[in-house]
Length: 466
Image (cartoon, rainbow, N blue to C red; front, side):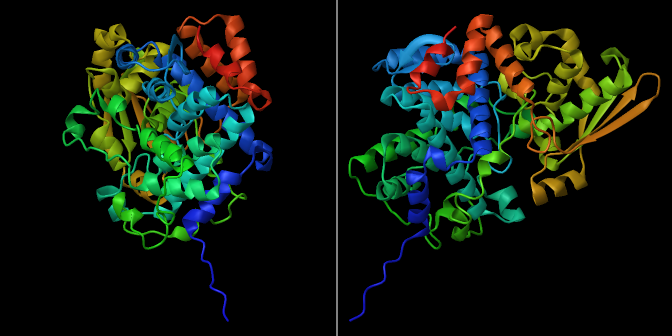
């Protein structure tokens, strides 16, 4: 009599790994990087609290109502944990200052608000938060690697931003809720059938990103959380949802898929380490151009008023969608190469880049016209081949001198990493702009730095309020 062979799906193997992975299993350098990601999200969230969008969203959540379970970045209000995750996601992303992984987009800005909000409700420890966030990253990165669209699909049908993030939320919520491997696989299956669709903007090339984009997009955490709770309470899901031949790749517009990459070198390679940080509050695609322009000025002792013209050469997307002049609102400005380069060359404090007075300043509005963006076929090729968003800046002086600088990896990327001082200064800038006192900032930094020692994450979240 033959014994029936039990076949375990790729989805179940990944679910088992993230469900049972312990903090003690994580390499020290992965933990160190994850703590920097959490610190960066806190920094960005504190900075984002001063924006008008934050006021509107918090007032809306108060109107809806709910139990006071979780702390907001920079605000004394407490909301339900789902509402707090929603608001904190916006606060951390609103300045476009948050970290990013080039192939995916913004993972931390979704995972960390969920971890902190749910963790505060559950009294999770710092180790539990770190473990949940790292495993959430790993799920997202592995799903993205498995999708691996062709060039044609990438530029036409593929959902390029945040693909797989909803599954990362499922992992974070599921681990904090204590799901076992089978429950986590169920939660994956439920998430796979509840993902939000992304709306495209046909006039983006002319008008840039719309002002409502950050409020309405990216809230994949809601179905991810719901799926984890449903699975915890015994609701079944498709435990093979990410397996080869199940069709997940078609949902996100990829034309090829290799499910074996979901489990390749699990526990040995960590995509978490590919997350980079931003030195400037602007879309990651503009960072190389800003770095190049600032380097030219610094290396040659140039004054901003000495410049006649600035030519930025980058990949096709940069030239098509980021050449926006005199932006009318903050979101538009974050995706405007002329505006962010002007901000950097004028020496405006990063905490003040998107204030109403700054954006309406006639000198700043006029200076943007000095900047043009052109397509560089080599840069387009490099991006499509290696996901490197490089840029070359040529600066022409009024006296006829010309200077040129090329940047592949801007400050903060894994190839050009932040220093400990960079992380500390970013937290200090953002917290100070909100009115947090130096002693409180020092305590917040110290607590973030020893996150794994916290018995209850509320020891951190209580410090998020000035």
